[in-house]
Image 1 (cartoon, rainbow, N blue to C red):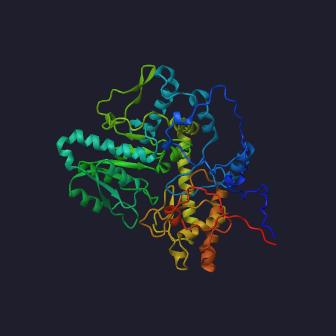
Image 2 (cartoon, rainbow, N blue to C red):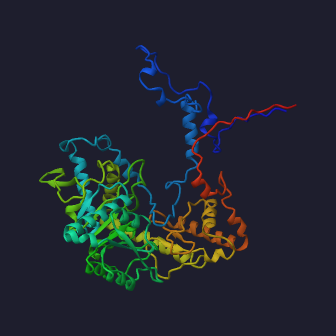
Image 3 (cartoon, one colour):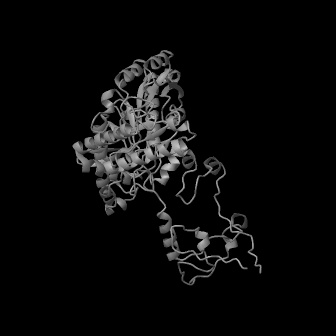
Length: 507
């Protein structure tokens, strides 16, 4: 009996591109050389050249490539397919009008080294977006240079460092403590350390809010440079004592940085600058509907008070009469944090989003985001443990406590959700909640999708109570089942190797 390799039929069960390879098959044809062939030894030293002749590189035609990757693309879960209930990530729909605007030829073909006089339209767009974000946040100083949320966060902390160094002079070296809540994003302490600060952690109350007594206690110990606070915080609750918190930090001589990751709950409703916040970063990919990265850099604008404005990165886009310019003459600036405004495409999309909605539309989007999260909070309260009684803002947090009694944990629930056609929620964050499930539907999700999600979660809870092993073994409908994710992360297989075994024939 011979072992015969079955030809793969067109289906979603696509093999590796290497398995489609056929010797000599290519998707291009090069003309004959019209110059004398050069000896490779005269150009590249032997020790710098490969010696495997690129063995194993797939040989495929253009049709092979197109069909292979198109089939694989159907495996992807995308924002165009369904809701992403990722808490803290704010995965909202990317409006097609924004994408169309970003593809205007004059924008897409603009070279980063184009002189100012040939880039007036782009500079005006950046300036207008700066002005809009200043109005939205209540903070007049804005830089669009940072290429991501964590980058904007780092920029904001550097502004605080520069401001304190100028204000306190030599004494600023004794003011190097940054206070961060125990529920904070992990990038907060990382940014603080990179900027030369040490971190002290503030405890949360049973309500999930900042513990004011502990905050005061830490401030009394001295050396306070500032506070890094997310509001609404990472359990989805608005810090109702925000003005008092800011006053405590200011009285201690520090500044307040607000992590703007959750601005989707505030736009058009409340402004951080009015709360006493000194500096904030925004995530255009979260709050203003630009893609998460978009195939290139994202955009994490840094907004600050007038006092901090001189320290913003250089160059700043400014208006000079009827013209727009890049101002490099900023002696107190922290300097460049990025070579060019190469994340310009994100700015186009964000401004398009703002213009499309207008002031009333932005407010309505915020209200819908909060309403959606509260709808889920109420609908799922009987099935899943809700650790905090307060009404959530744009995201709601649950725990696996009710399901863990049957041996079903947060990871199992998330994996089972895949079988129901949903992307899993954020899991095990924030760390202060046991078996955390952080759910953020955003305003992009309608009532039908919300109800479908609720029904799926209720069904999973029922399975956890009556047939827990079904949930523990999930997912069941995917091409690859439950992975050992720890081993996959520690020992990733990054290179394909052809099989060396020879298929034998037997009678």
